[in-house]
Each structure stands twice: as structure tokens, then as C-alpha cells.
Amino acid sequence: MFLAMFRREKITILPLSLAQRLGLRVFVLLAAGYFVFGVSTVGAQQVAQEGVAAEEEEERVRPTIDLGMFQVKDFRPTRNETAKVTFKIYLALDRTVDEQTVEALEYWKHRLRDQVIIAIRLSQTKDFLEPDLSRFRRFILVRTNRVLKASLISEALLTEYSFKTD
Image 1 (cartoon, one colour):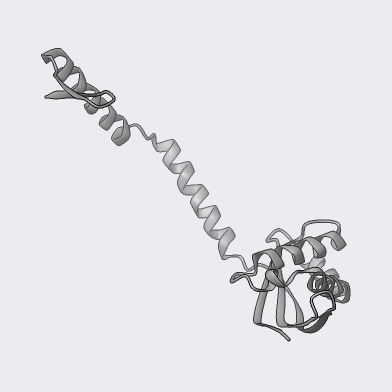
Image 2 (cartoon, rainbow, N blue to C red):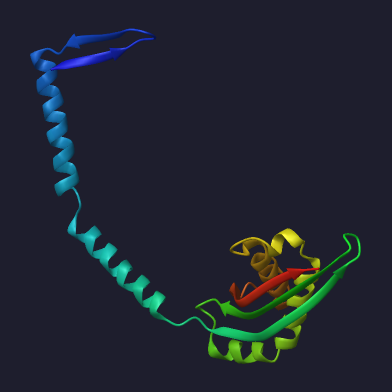
């Protein structure tokens, strides 16, 4: 066995002594044994229980609020363009939200719709041209959560999206 030593432009190969080779082998065997036998059964059970809890959490259906279809035509005189945005939006709530809160939010639909329209009018043209609309969706989340005075809404889901400028 050899040990390679690298210096600026030279590579020097030095032979390892018998003691160094034996120490390297012992180190590799100990490291392999630790990774194979080092995990305790208590830790494995906790990991399995956390995995089951996470799967149950994912299986729960997230409550959503359907805000309906939006067709907004926005005239932007500074650029002499008219932007037409059409989409359907659903607001996905956090999984911890109870049914009473969802029912109460149904009465706030008009306020949430107003905030979505404000977000459309305040957004720039480049926000509508992103492939995943991440900036625009984040802007909707900020506006709607500000009205609710709590971050109950975790995601804005857009479908049937189209954007056109004239």
C-alpha cells in the first residue's frame, strides 16, 4: 500500500509501514461496524413511529376555500399596455385549521377576493410570466394572510391560468 502526498506540482508516493496499514484496516473495520451495528432499536422505533405519524398527517385532506374564477383586465398607462389575467383560485389552509374556522372563512370570501384583485393590480408583468407563478402566489398569500391577521392559508392553488397583454 502506498500513501500519495500532493504538493504543488509534484506527487510523491510514500510506502506505508506495516503498523500504518494495520491501523488503517482497523479504522475501516471499526467505521463499518459502527454504521452497521451502531443504530439502537429504540432509535429505530422512534423513527418508525414518526414516519407513521407523518404519513397520517399527509393523508389528512387539507381544507380549501374556492374563491372562484377571476377575469381581470388591468390598464397600465405607464407602459401603454393592457394586461388580461384569467384564473381560478383555491386557497389551501393549514392542516391544523378546524371546521369552525373554515366555515367562518366562507363568510370572508368577498374580502379574500378583494385582496386577490389588489395583488393582481400591484403585480408586475414579469410576475405573471414566471412558469410556476411563485412570486405572484406568494404575493396573494401575503395579502390574504394579512387580512386574516394569522397565517392560516398555506398555499394558493391556481388553475385555468391565462395571461395576455395588448
